Length: 251
Image 1 (cartoon, helix red, strand yellow):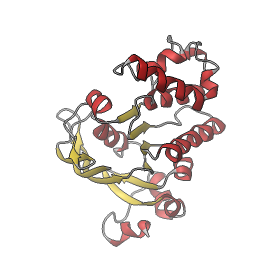
Image 2 (image 1 turned 90 degrees about the vertical axis):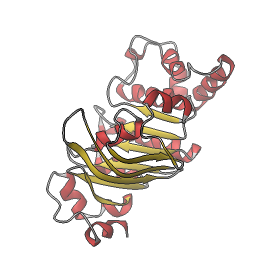
Image 3 (image 1 turned 30 degrees about the horizontal axis):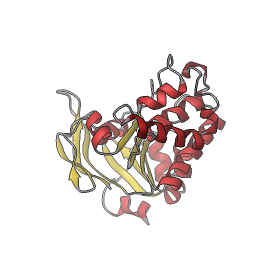
Image 4 (image 1 turned 180 degrees about the vertical axis):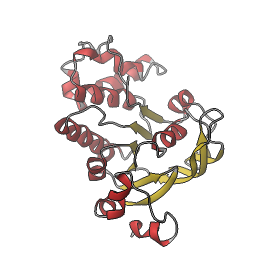
């Protein structure tokens, strides 16, 4: 569904942050992007979303190159949802108003139907739909941001650090909600995460970046047990990032 092919990208006139990245994510799976700070994982997500345009290579959705399409057009016309790491809800608006913002481009009847369905799926939000978002806990705010993205019925959901600032217990609840979305909808979910072990616990596959390249990739369960993944995630250098040394993580 999503395929990133040999993408190079950076900001303004600066150097490449991504240095020939390949990534694939299919319908019905969670793919997580991991790695130390500065490795390029957020830049990669922004390339897929449309905030950053690739300098070289391509970003394809169902075979169509969408690398040059801005984020607002992808959300409205290409069935993509995006949840940023910070400022992902409007604190002065109510829960209901926040969710409905995600469907403002839809006809009012369809918008109402989708909102009602979401309230059934998320009863904790339904019971607080008239409260300001500022009154919610951190976990509730994250679930609210997910609900707002879901109201447009995306085929692909992009998540930037969904556990940022959350307690361990709340982090587990949020990741459980993400896994439930995959299981219920068959959606393609791509997320960037710092909490590697929690993310690998719900993901189907993962990519570990190092210095703007894919260092390890494979099934999440395999990477969880891979000592090289632990070395990379702790900020060490990978001895070899190509050929058989990388492919062993995909076994």
